[in-house]
Image 1 (cartoon, rainbow, N blue to C red):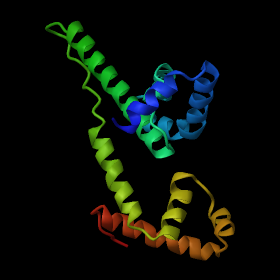
Image 2: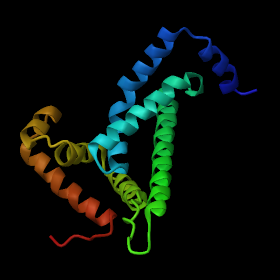
Image 3: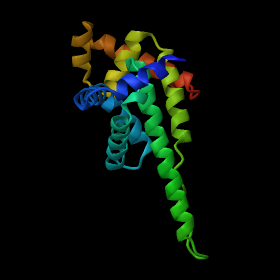
Length: 182
């Protein structure tokens, strides 16, 4: 018998308010990350919100299947979200085939795989950067934090921030195989 089999009956016996509190805590901890992933997997923000909502509805319906521990919970929620996406893609493909007649061509199916591969390559390139340079690059390029704010936050000069940005961009380009033509 494994730990999940033991934990599941205990979770099922919890009062409804405990389940609601757990799902609420899961939402507070993981909804932003799940929304970002859902947004990358869907065509619009509304679709992404629906995906996240359905993910947490499934968590609320089966609280005993959610593993303990933040990383395990997040992994479980991500798997649920991806499975929901796959189900929707399959349903859309079936509907598209059903609507086809001899003159109508279906829309090309949305394939998230190239995006997920690119995302993985960028993540690997970022992970190869020294921590300070990675943090500066992410704060500036992803979060849109201005250079003076980054400098103040890290206790370094704006010139140093600019230098880290320049070097970080070159290292990222090299890691991603683009080379540098500066």
